[in-house]
Image 1 (tube, rainbow, N blue to C red):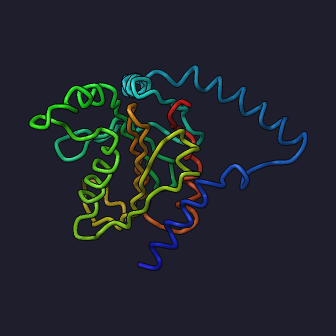
Image 2 (image 1 turned 30 degrees about the vertical axis):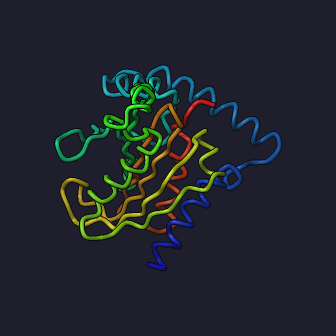
Amino acid sequence: MKQFKQILLTGIWMFAFVPALFAQSGKEHKASLKTRKVKFASAQKNLITSQQLKNFLQLVADANATFSFPKGFKEIKAPNNEDVSFDYAMEMPGKDFELWLQVRSQKENWAAYEKTLNDKANQQANPDSLYYEIGKAQALAFSGDNAPLERVLPASIADRYNADAGRSFMINLPDEKITKHYRYALLITLQKFHTGTIMAVCFSNQKGPEFFRNIVGASNCIKFKP
């Protein structure tokens, strides 16, 4: 348990401070940044080709969020069946690392909830709590008999994603086909009140620094709009 706590704290720290870890200095940084922006813009123009990505970008827009394809990743087919349902998935080739994403708008749910506020017999659950329910249910489905280590995301990290709340779940995965026999997963859910929910799951076969370096590579690919 202590080991998992340390892993989770390391991951949260890296999410919070990645800009400082990889900052370059002076003109070298500015020149490198400009070059990366040109290459990234060119890559983005050629990226929107798959139907999976087009469908995902619509879900992202509906949830008032943004998505930028992270460098070093490759699109793969997202699992979508009776056991597990995600909207988009990517892998880092040769790294034994995958990222699965699920995005849901809560606007219609919030409107329906407001209509039932004065109707106790038919009152619905507050949609602003769904991020936790969805994340917890998915974490338990992945973990089997291995209880996930759950933490509330600090406000400083939630703010980076323009979210109002969030949870993380560190999971020691059982050896199952549904999770492609990966050994570990970090599941994060984010909520923007009255607006939408984002769930991201990072999978790996090792839980050392390399796992969190890979997480850093994808940490800014999706966020809510301000």
